[in-house]
Length: 74
Image (cartoon, rainbow, N blue to C red; front, side):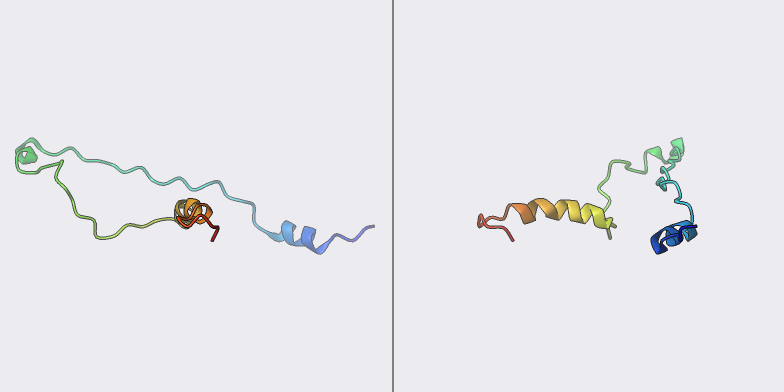
């Protein structure tokens, strides 16, 4: 009987891959008619923070790395 490789033994001991996590969709509540004239739903709301995934940052920076203003690669 052939011995299993260490990689095969390690792969067999790992948990099964889970499905891709889906971001929850936001739920919106209707503004009551009594408040509709008081609340400006199209007003500018200042942001205090923004959370970005690392992949988003990477994809934004890759074009800058390929084409710098000096014409040389970084």
